[in-house]
Image (tube, rainbow, N blue to C red):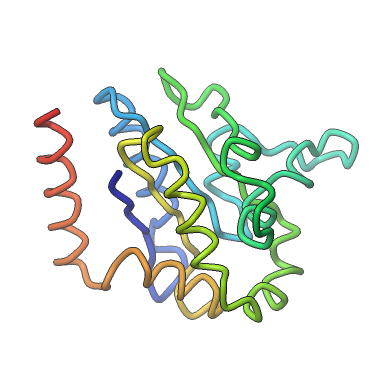
Length: 175
């Protein structure tokens, strides 16, 4: 399983657009794809048709989203939280949704030094289920948790990112 984190130091540069389109492109190449939205704005979750925040009673993501995945130890594993996108792609993709509640909880999560370890462990539990994981991260200066998670999957720089995508496509094309 290959994991790609999409991040940048500033906002508004197309991270979410890149993440959701990359996930859709891999899925259209018949790869098993998981999109993980760790941005509190939840734009990747919205783009994949999963957000229903207009009315509180319709909010079915409040208790099962990336916040529970990262903050819980042995509970709330990926199969418990994953959702299938709705009217986004044919075929649809698996998504670990974010939630606007993450904005309030980010400070608490930055105190958990095990946040990245928990995400890594939970991704390893499903490594046979997916060929590629795409992580949509907020801009790196936003908070330490997201920076640690993004840093765990990439070493920064456009050259590294371009090479990682080329290598991933080449590796997956051989299957």
